Image 1: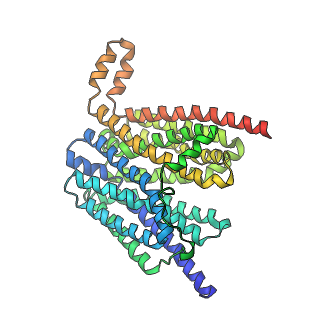
Image 2: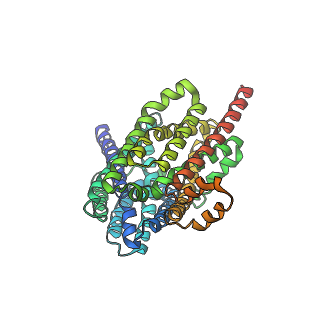
Image 3: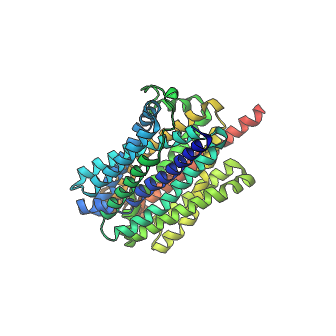
Amino acid sequence: MSILTRLRTKRAALAFIFVTAVLDIVAMGIIIPVLPQLIVGFVGSNAEAGWINGVFVALWAGMQFLCSPIIGSLSDQYGRRPVILISCAGLSLDYVLMAAAPNLWWLAAGRIIAGITSSSFTTVYAYMADITAPERRARAYGLIGAAFSGGFVLGPVLGGFLGEFGPRVPFWFAAGLSGVAFLYGLLVLPESLPVEKRMRFSWRRANPVGALVLLRRHTELSGLAVVNFLLYFAHHVFSAVFVLYAALRYGWGPKEVGLLLAMVGVLDMGVQGGLTGRVVQHFGDRATMILGLAGGTVGIALMGWAPSGWIFVAAMLPNALWGLAMPTLQALMTRRVGDDEQGQLQGANMSVASIAGVASPLFFGWIYASSAGGEFGGVARGVAGLGEWTAPLIGALYDPGLAFYLAAGILGLAAVIGWGVARRAEREESVTV
């Protein structure tokens, strides 16, 4: 193969990975504003839909946790191309299944399949590593990150507008996008992993829990991993209850929800891409992380209190500072391990995020269903017997914003733990130097 041919092949592969990432993320984002509404259509209750939507989000995250390392190992044995193509085709058929789902059981099956097939994102990163020199991988991964961010901005907007024609319409559109990605890849995507570099499938390497052992071997990492877990746990209040909360409290439909989610994506891109580096340069990683966690705490608390939609939108501004926390937390963690453990650390972080992604939606879904549906009435009556000073607590038990208040408290706890752990780590670093 000539140099010119190899260059053209590489460009085609890069274009496919970028386009496929955009199409897949757009397809996933499209259904965010309408999936809870589809659930409401089946159960007939906004409050009951809260815990069911939480279960669906947890199913998706659980499949990601179990299947990401398995699919990655399968791509090591059989190559990246077949895994990516099967994933695109599987997602397309899965969206068709959810669009035509006659009941909640079929919809739940669709979420399980979606969690499995979308686990191939690990293979996308592996594909980029195959075709990119080590010194250029940061830029390549940045392109994928940009594709993900752009997809999450565009997807909810499309889903919101398509949802005006019915809650099932966005699913059909998402199926079409994933189908286009499959056909495009079938025509242009070359294999990136030569046969001589392939590795037989091993359940030891495919174990989703194995990487967590690393976190136990480093004291500071254990504390920072707790912060990481709490951060992801609090963040899933959005995926679990936001759409239902916005409909119940402000009367927002798919279009308004889609536009607001797009705004969140734009703000997040601005903070992580344009603000983080400057703040770290002036204040350092630890202070920047705490600033991000504090901003998120204030923003989420305001969202739970906001008596009007405009105040809720305004709360997005301090909440956007949350974007400062994740990259600085990652930076603090990477300094705790050697170069030969960086990959294992990222695997451990993904496992922590996945565990939070399973537990958090179940918790917040239950909290929302119980507060919005009045199921905490017995608890409220018991608290009332303690005295008049308990009136604010009683009001919170009946407030549909209770889930946001709890998320704010969890994020505030993460800030306290993060400050202490990072401060202790910095002291140890100074003593070592």
